[in-house]
Amino acid sequence: MAQPKLQLQFAHSAVLRYGLAIASFALALGLTLLAQRYGFRNVEVPLLLFAVAVTAWHAGPGPAALAVVLSIAFFDYFFTEPRYTFYVTYSDIPYLIVFISFALLVAWFSAVRRRVEGDLRQARDHLQIEVVERTQQANLLNLTHDATFVRDMDFLITFWNLGAQELYGWAPEDAVGKHSHQLLQTVFPAPLEDVHAELLRTGRWEGELKRTTAQGTTVVVAARYALRRDEQARPVAILETSNDITERKRREQEIENLNLELAKRSTALEAINKELEAFAYSVSHDLRAPLRHIAGFTELLQKKVSAVVDEKSNRYIAMILDSAKRMGNLIDDLLAFSRIGRAETQKTQVSLAQLVKEALTEVR
Image (tube, rainbow, N blue to C red; front, side, top):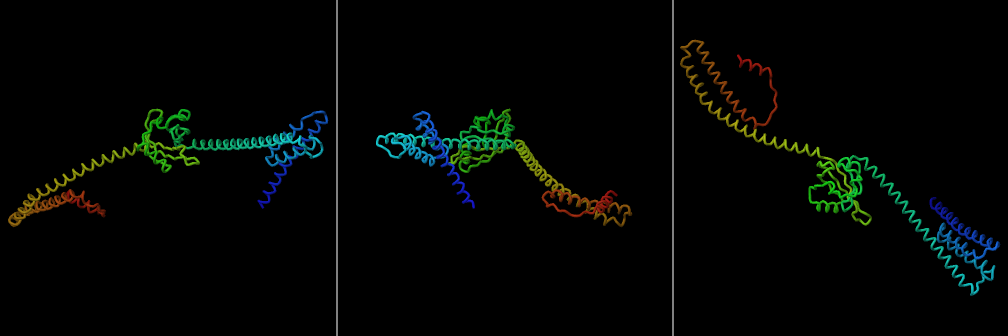
């Protein structure tokens, strides 16, 4: 269905173009005959050539060729001797050749001029479209809060959005045309040659950069480069987007410093725990010997005198033995406590009632 419709449109366009050729020629011929009737001479050549030029300008080379043929034929018929015949004498041939040459030259010039103007108009339309697209893209880039700018392969800034102005402090008119690295005093994490080589190889680069703002403060940014190439795959521009991570890097440095301080304190605490463990082991070892002596001799004393002393004295001896036993338990607990740092933590249920009962018994 679409193909017949296109054929119909093409046929309609051809009719209009060739109709314009016939109409232009007919009008020029009519004006020429009218001018001769009123005594005007030698107007046939300019009018016929004008008809050829108009046809070539508005209808193209095919209708222009038709206008040239019609002009030559009717020029011979109406304006060369013998008139009103298509007979050509030898004397008329140079005149006809000159007219044909002028007609062809006018048709060619008009067609070329028309084509050139069409190309220029098309180029202008493309340029306007591209300007509109670039303007829309620039407006979209201005909407983002990321610092975005474009520079050529000589590092000269060609575009600078509002995000870049907010971050670095320079207005677009102050930044465009400046060398980006010199303006921002960029410090790269690697040699610039390596960064540039990776960008050319992969078309992308990401890294953290240190830069100086218009106010003289240093900022750290997470930058992303994207390489733009032309139709011949030649690098032509670099698009950079960056975010301010100065505060994040400051907090990371604080966390790192705290971790170092914590590591130092952990090392010191570990040393203190070892000293405490050694001290507790030494104390428990040194206290066990006299405690064993106290308990042993008290038991011997209890066996020998229990029958001859009163009940109150026996109770005193029993209290000494019980206290010695509890002191031995405390020494064992102290030694176990000194080793708790190396033991694995275990969760278990504890009876608070039993703890309170034991505490009351201890107090009594």
